[in-house]
Length: 87
Image 1 (cartoon, helix red, strand yellow):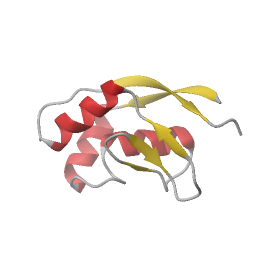
Image 2 (cartoon, helix red, strand yellow; image 1 turned 180 degrees about the vertical axis):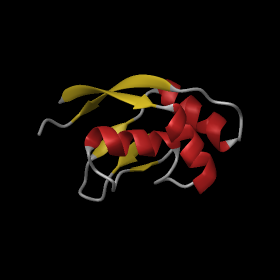
Image 3 (tube, helix red, strand yellow; image 1 turned 135 degrees about the vertical axis):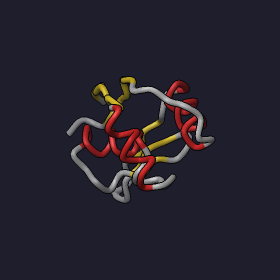
Image 4 (cartoon, helix red, strand yellow; image 1 turned 120 degrees about the horizontal axis):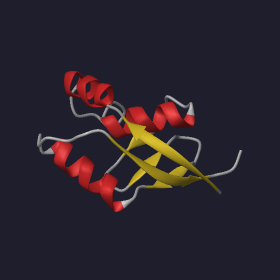
């Protein structure tokens, strides 16, 4: 496993608000897709996954961000580190 930093930007948040609350278009999904260079990643409350069998556990602060975003509460850009399978 290797560690990468995922950066959720203000643009991720703004674009997600335009697109609705979907597991492929939320701010976390957009940031994970960009960092992993894989547009197939989806995000649930506890994990991110693609359909090739890659599952990434999401840190508690990310889970809290998702809950706030889904509840339409204000959220701000932030970064987090996550372990991913080595290439």
